Image (cartoon, rainbow, N blue to C red; front, side, top):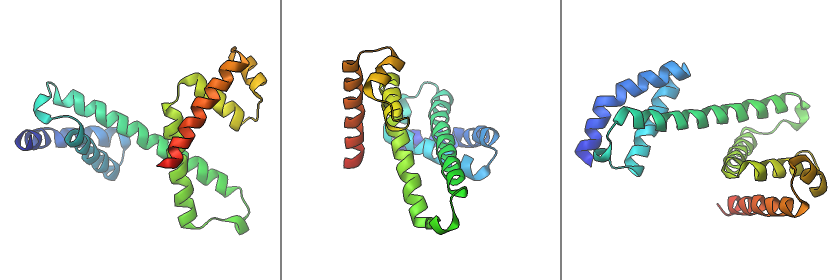
Length: 162
């Protein structure tokens, strides 16, 4: 795989970097995501099996770019929340980093849930709705909401184990 990966890298890295730079508007972010894309290729798929390397690289890079934007959005929302808090409650840089990392992990966990399970979980945890209210909102039975919540809680437990 070494020669094939080297060939794919040397043939397509500049193209991928340019594509990412146009999308992101940042040379640093483009370089980082291009590198991450080739790391994914290294760990997931033998380079010699690629029929259309650019299509594959663009698909992987696009997914990484979406994750990058989600992280930025979470960080922006967290910083906006901090901005309205009194200065006495200002968290340390270490606390900020830990909270942001936790938010990213929670977001990734929620993204893995089926849409109705995610919606039920968020209605319960963020809006404080009861299972009966969630059932009415989603148009399902109370029993189904219990199943959704059990599924969401299992994902939360798995998140804690990592």
